[in-house]
Length: 260
Image 1 (tube, one colour):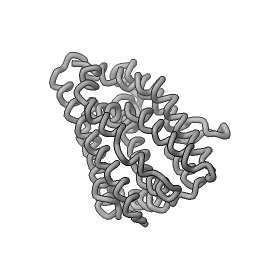
Image 2: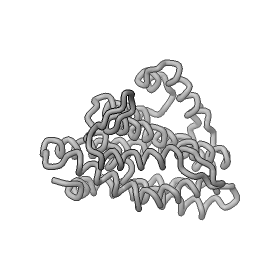
Image 3: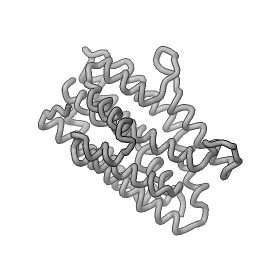
Image 4: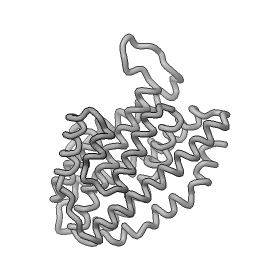
């Protein structure tokens, strides 16, 4: 088994995401706000998957030791540099999460929900407690629970599977579709930072991070069929949770719920 066979096995889930009716229901600036205010949780927890991989696959403690495969160390550190310190629209260094939050502010979306959640995480020092205490949609809680369960289990190939097949590999297509709707439907709102964020993701994920992440999974699993089976199962569950997230955002948009 290899990453090509995994992509074949999960193709129906990816198709369901890429053709999800959520896209067609982002029709107004209010709808866009609802989308951003809930999708930002996926942008944030993606960073946790990334840092979990860096902790597992590179040395992040002292004294430094040459941990693991240097090829994998290079791959993950290259992705970390871009995700944590990319160039913004005005040429400054910023994480992709912070870019997203700034883009939300620019177009009038409410950042209270995500920032209050992060404050709670900082105060409780317990992500599970913070998720349970939050006022998030159950599907978004399930999405976060899955991410941090995979991280807690601590198996690098499973974390890499969630990172690669459940997240990074999907971003170019999903964000391209959303971007087209933004440009067409919201010309009166300043979306320059948001459009830049999406375009930047499309550029680096399709050309650089996607192939890097695939190579990382190949390196981690090699010829171990048990690991490849784990990757298959985790990838499918990650996509199911992503579909649940999309369902939740669509439900919120259709009900015009405001979570604060």
